Image (cartoon, rainbow, N blue to C red; front, side):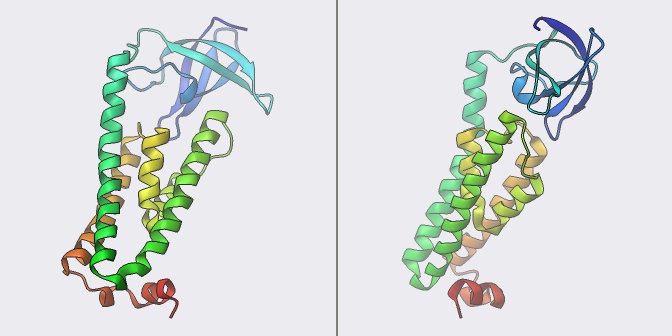
Amino acid sequence: MSNLRGELVHWNDARGFGFIAGDDGQRYFVHISSIMRIATRPRVGDVVYFAARKGEKQQLEARSVTIAGANPITPQARRSQTRRELDWQLILALSLLGLLAYLIWHDPHAGFLLLPYAAGGVLTFCIYWLDKRAAEAQAWRVSEATLHGLDLAFGIIGGLLGQAIFRHKTRKTRFMFATLMIGFVHLALLAGLALGEIKLEALPATLHAVLVGQ
């Protein structure tokens, strides 16, 4: 079926999905990835036009969704938005990498931080990639709390790079704000260690013991 008309009757903006009541009397699941890029977020009450199909669980799904009256994002605006999204994430990730490298070069005893940041970064980057694929396939998703937990647990560099490269979660203001705060926590930690304001010995004893293996 194609060229169906309906109304968006439910929308969970935080999770990026909702339901359309079609004029044919059917109810269709819709994911944000199936909606044409527009300058505003979808809203309950929007009139939509879409194609329909059955998903893996035989659930009716809306695809190629356009929202009546919504202004599409022009190629120029999309490129500008992408640059803004990538700028702060990449700058913060590179700042963290630079501080970590300087800290280890300046104080070899800080080398024990390399393993958790490297391992945590790689793991978190991969999780963001898997979650992006799951979002596109409308499959099981990783919770936002888990993603933030991975970012906080030394995965922040990989998380920032994952968001920037895969353009994942970058349209969710609350998620971005939480990511920024976590990034600043790590930035403050590494800057404090690099400037000598925080001593390695001042790190929590349990964390130090686990990372050093003592």
